[in-house]
Image (cartoon, rainbow, N blue to C red; front, side):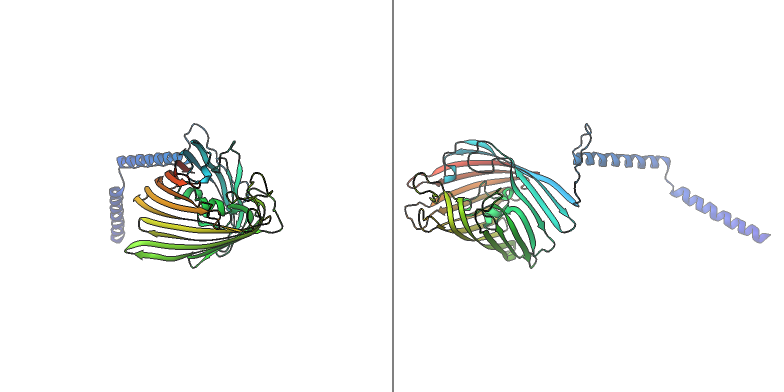
Length: 408
């Protein structure tokens, strides 16, 4: 009997101790209310942030774009470049162009990928998309391709895209240091073409290559001008990457070449004429080969870039000559005046449309400018001052270019 009483007393004591501990640990009603109120406030803030990120103001239902196919990822983006120009013609591209405001580029693109190692891009431009004066803006395709990306050393791309020739030509329009590319780039490289290309990289992206075959008939053309193709290739390498003087340093180099047989392709500034006599029509037919080298140095807050391009022409009609060589080059130095916000640069470039004729003046151009990065390249303001002489015996002429860029 005493044993049972002791057991009961011991059990009752344990229960009382546990109850006391629970009561001591249990939050009060006020504490519970405060915690609940804090949770509600946190949820409200998260909800507000989510609405802001989605761009939904609550006045209209949110519209969500969904892939129509079976791709596992799809993105819609693009960019807008508004431009203002004033001054004369420091190089031949500005001859006859007055002070103006223009939509230099207005591009919208759709990119996507499939889990089966394919990706794609379709991009259209709705702006001027050229330095020359346009009587009316029109929609046109810039990039449209499918890419098989299973192996990093051998991506296979088919469609319309940039030919792998010329460093400056291959730099994205949104990441150019200057508002416009060099005159030599415009005259010697070929830009976008329809064709098939293979590219890849090795040794942790320290060595890369790109090669392709294209119609050679220009952008947005669904024909080949003759029975041959335009062939282009480029090799790039990182010569040095590390510390120099305790500062991050990178040196990259590139070489490229191009070969094609053209038939009535527009090539301005060389004097080509498909029908001898009368006004020069700038249409070239014949054999054309080009090559180029380039290098880029980045040290701390400073940069230095240079490129040399040369083209050899053999006109079928021997007009204006049985053969001629043209070349051009540029050097540009940059400095981060305000790191990640303000960049200053100076660029010198030269272009000779016929190296064998002393009577044809080499076009020389200086460009001084500033790039102000409000949000990197996504929101950027650029101001360029150009001074050059496009005509033999003429005086230096000046032009100011201002651009606002928004990437979305």
